[in-house]
Image (tube, rainbow, N blue to C red):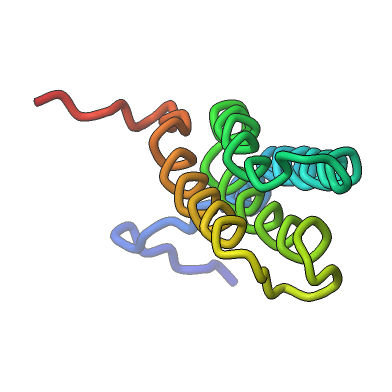
Length: 134
């Protein structure tokens, strides 16, 4: 018995599902870990020294470098993690996310705001999307 073949029917194409896997980049996670580790080390080093209230503002340089080399996500997560680490482990009352001194609280807030802004400002552009020219 012969099979009838319809000439106008679309031909089934092979689909390679291995090509369609989403590529997940863990590059940002390395930057976030570096930023978090740097915040923890700086907290351990400067916790009993004078001038520690300026540490969050100095840490903006670390956040900027992480954002430049590892991207926006690493800079944002690093900023959030550093703010939590500084408020809990650096400023009194220790062990609480509350910061008593108004200048220390303001510096943590400025670090968080500046870290978010600098992460978006200095992050590299994706290779397929060049920045727009005006």
